[in-house]
Length: 196
Image (cartoon, rainbow, N blue to C red; front, side, top):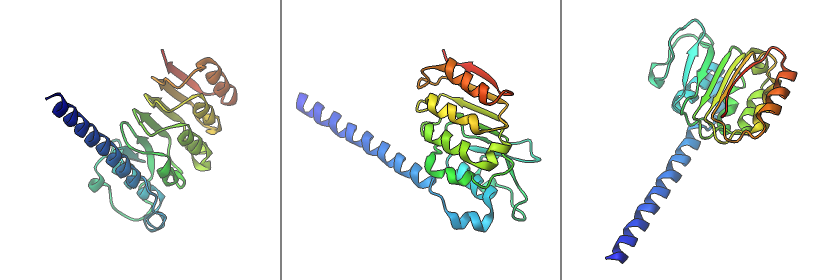
C-alpha cells in the first residue's frame, strides 16, 4: 500500500510539473512580438492586443473605462486609439514582449501588480524606451518578487515620472538608498513605500 501511495504522489507531482511547464510555454507564446502585425495595425493596437492576450487591461486616451476583452477592442482608422494607461495586474507579460511598448507615445500610467514575470530586466527595458521617458508619469510596482533595487534604480531614466508606489517587494534590500538615488535623479518624484 505504501508503495502504491508513493507511486501516486510521484505521478501527481510529474503532472503538476508538466502543467507549470505548459503554462510557462504558453505565456512565452503570448509574449512573442509580431513585428509585421505592429506595422500593419500600428503600435498602440498591437500593444493592446499583446496586453489583453496576456491578461492585462488598457485604457485609451479619451476613455474612462478599461478594456480587458480582446474581442471588445475598439475598431476604426489606424492610429485613432492611443494607449494612455496599462494595468498589468496578475498578467503574464514578460520581458520578451516589451518590444510592443517601443511605439507608444501617450502612455502615462503603468501598474505592475502581482506580475510573476516582471524582473529587473523588464524595468530596465521599460526605462530605456525614449517615448516612455517623456510620457510616463505614474507607476506602481507591487508584489513582483523578482524586482530588486537594481531594477528600481533603472527607473531614473523616466524623466517625467512624478509618482511611484512600491509595495511588497522582497527583493529590495536597501530601500532608503534606492529611494534617495531615484529622488536625486528625479527631484519631482513622489515615492510612496509600503515595503515592511
